[in-house]
Length: 92
Image 1 (tube, rainbow, N blue to C red):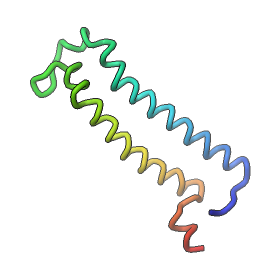
Image 2 (image 1 turned 180 degrees about the horizontal axis):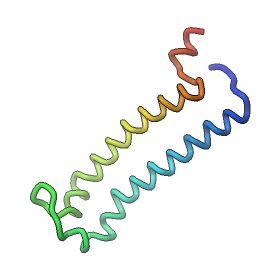
Image 3 (image 1 turned 120 degrees about the vertical axis):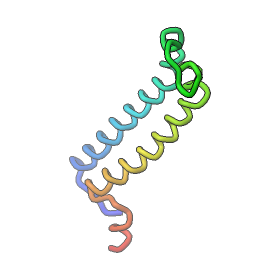
């Protein structure tokens, strides 16, 4: 792996940390936020189930799986932006 200057490394880790915090907030909302407002969210349904039950049974898991894929794609783009792409660095 090539060396990068401190300013670029700080920007890289600030970006990655910001994204991790965003992903954690989305995960918290999908798992605990729906439960905290279950009574208010039971007014509409998804696939014939009340929304709060759907999120508890399937929605939260689907949200986490989608977050994994989004995280992988976004992190690859960030690595390329900062010149840390593994494929390019392996050729050097």
